Image 1: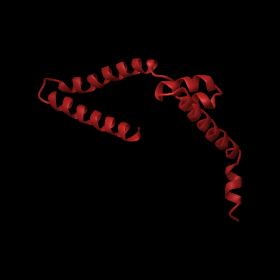
Image 2 (image 1 turned 60 degrees about the vertical axis):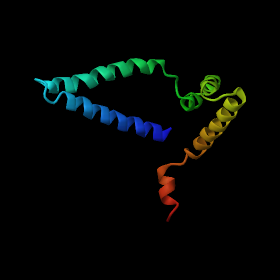
Image 3 (image 1 turned 120 degrees about the vertical axis):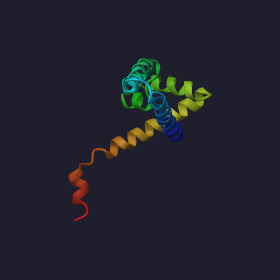
Length: 111
């Protein structure tokens, strides 16, 4: 997932460069260079409403059934989605148990 994200960012930079290069010799082409990404940003913002919420965020908020439903769309079987939901919930619970430690406690333990 991370490598796909990095690849898409790189492709985005490449497309931006190519579009800017295409407007290089256009009269007042700099306006298009700024306007074109704005249009794409508006389209992207509209499409974000169709994306599902993060299952991890749903679990943090205690909405386990909705998180399992999102995992069902990602993975092939309901059992796999339930297993991943349970594992993620255990990870979140373990992080909550250690998050009660203050920065002062961490610093003072090295004395």
